[in-house]
Image (tube, rainbow over all chains, first blue to last red; front, side):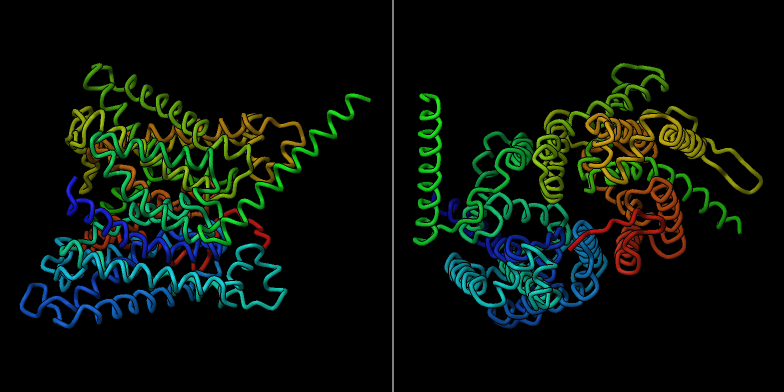
Length: 310
Length: 292
C-alpha cells in the first residue's frame, strides 16, 4: 500500500463526498429522495470537459482554465435541475423518486447519442487537473457552505419541510421554493463533483453515470445517517474505501456490499451518525442524551425494585 | 401496411414479456406502496434457472420452465423475508424499502457474476427458427408461444385475484392494509402471496427474455423498462400494468423500426417523464391520497 494508491482512493472519496453532500442536503435535510444525481454529475463532467479540454483534441474543447470548468459544470447542472424541479417537484414521495430516476437515465441516454461529445464511446483526453489539494479545498468549501446553509433561515425551512410538509406550509414557508433551492444547490454540488471526476479519470463515458452511480450516492447518504453532515463525510470515506479493502475478495466484494446495504437498512436504519454531528456541541448533545437515558433507566429500576419489596 | 403489421406483432411479443414483469412491480406496489427494484434480479435468476434446467439438467422444456418459475417464486419470498419483513415490522418509511431493494438487487446480480460468471449465454434452440407464414406476414414461432403463454398466465393471475379468497384479500389489502388486518385478514400471508405470484411470473418472463435475447447478469437493468411500463399503466393497477406494457412494447418497436434503434431506450424514459408530469397515476392507476 503505497501513498499514491491511498491518495488515489482518498481523491475518489473526496470527489464522491462533494456529490454526497449535495444529496445529503436534498435527502437528509429536505426529505426528497433522488435516484438521478448521476445525471447531474454527467452534466457537470461533460460541460467541464468541454470547457477545459484543449481545442486540438477530439472531441474538441475550449481550452479554458480549470476554475472556469468547475463554475461552468456546476452552473449547467444547476440550470438543468431548475427545469427538472419545475415539472417534478409537485410529485409526492415515490413518484418524485421515480421521476428523478427517469431524468437521470434520460440525461445519460442523451449523452450516449450526442456525437459531438463522443457518444457512447466516451471522451478521452480530459486534462488531469484534479489534484489532491484542489479536491481537498473543494471539500472544505463544500462542507463549510453546507453547514452554514443548514443553520440559516433557508436551511431551517428545508428541515421544516422534511419534518411535516403541511405544517411547514401553514407556518408560512414557501414549500415549493424551499424544495427548489435544495434541489438546485444539490445539483450544483453533483455537477462540481462531476467536473472533478472527469478531470480525475481524464476519460468519461455516459456508462459511468448510470442508475448504479445514483444509487451508490443515496446509499452513502443513508449509511452516514440522514440529516448529518459529518455522517455524510464518514459515509463517503468508509463506503469508497470499503470496495478497495474488499478487493482481496475480488468478485465477491459487491456481493458483500449488497448484503451490507440490506443489513444496515434492517438493523441500523439511522445510519452511522443518526442525525447527530461530530462537532463539540453535537458530542455534548449525544452524551447528555445518553446520561438522561441512563438516569431514567436507573430511576425506573429503583422504582421497580421498591415496588417488589412492598 | 405489411411492415406496420409486422412491427405490431413484434411489439405485442415483447410487450407481453414486459407485462409479465410489470405485474410483479404493480402487485407489490399495490399493497406495500414501494417500488421493488429487486424484482429485476429475480427475473434474471429465472432466466438462469431455465437455462441451466435445459442445458445442465437436460430437462424437457416444460419441466425447465416450471423449475424456473417455482425457483423464482422461492427467491422472491426469500428476498421479502430477508430484506423487507424486518422493515415492515418496524413500519419504516418507503425509502428504506427502496434502498433495501437496491441492496438485494446488487446482491443477486453480483452473486451470479461471482458464481456463474459474467459471460453472455444463449439458450439452446427449443422451437424451430422457421417463422409461420401468414400471407405476407412472418410470425416467429417463439414470439407466438411467448404471446400465448403470457396471455394465459396473466389470465390465470386475474382469475386468481378476482375469484379466490386469497385474491379477494389481496384486493382488500390494496385498498387499506390496516383495515384489512383489523378485519382478520392475515396480511403477512397476503404479502407472501403477492411476492410469490410476482416471483412466479418473473420466472416465466426471465425464461422468455433469455430465449428471445441472451442470458447475462445485468438483465435486471433492462427490466427497468417493465417498471416504466408499470408506471405508464398506473402503479398498483394490474390491468394498467398489462396495458402499459403492451403499449410500451409497441411504441418501442415502432420507434426502433421507423426512427432509429438508438432512440428505443430513450423513448421509454421520455414516456416515463411525460406520464409523471401529465398524469402521475398513469393510465388507470390507484389514486393514493398522500397526506402532506
